[in-house]
Length: 405
Image (cartoon, rainbow, N blue to C red; front, side):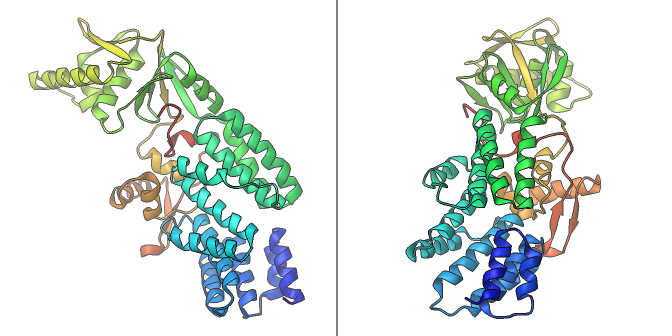
């Protein structure tokens, strides 16, 4: 490897893409193409980066399997950064196996980190933790130890293990200072801010207040009966009743939870659950049926008693609270992903949300009409983006189970 290639590689490792390009920008040999692709990715031009890396992969000979595998790993990282979640993970796994077979353990480990980060992004935390358990970051350079700590913190925040998240972020901060890469330091700072910004609202006895992530963790560990509007469930520390697929029942449960210890008039319940402005005997009959279904679903946690005006929650716990999002609006789950500041395709959002692409596209069109998101590109290259909402974290909107799920 010649001196210019070596110098460019060192510049990229130090987070200096412009310094790398000064050395290889006019070269079209395979190593230079690969380094140019990585430099363009660091500068945010993902389309050009992909093109250069694919050219580099083709330019390396069939015998240069390690170099080709490294290009594939770099392309996978670009796919992750550009939220191209449809990029084939089997290709990355094959590249990782090649690197391991040829003794390139550091790049093989980095390929594994990319796989873990993708799993975290789409909410497959159990699988991510199993893969992460096999990785020992101690032999790696500071930048990669920072990535490891960020992944650990991200999983801990999704799991609502805030002490573990703080410890991991503290380690990430220490390693990022040693790495001296500004972009990595900014990523650590951004992750740290999530622990100190409101994550949810507590609604109880007619009042409400904002909660930090550690306060949400404490609330879910308490003896309170929690009507969880972030995950559409009713829960206590030992039992979770999911109503995510039963929106009418959850609307009734939330109305009863917000009114506790009082009752909720029948006309209010009809409006909350069915959107009914005018009611007749058929509406009231339907309400009785749905209340019966909710009573059966919540039997391990609470009863529902009829009152003169309507219905009231009769919990087996000392108190009832409602846990809601910091700000509630339609399609908040889509906005939660877009709030990371990255550009997303509708197909990637559908994969992350576990919804159909058509459903996600309708949500994006609605948000665009309201001026809350914007798109660029055409057809399959179309991407959606929105600036993050200042002062609020979105951890509770993302697809991951909370404690007890």
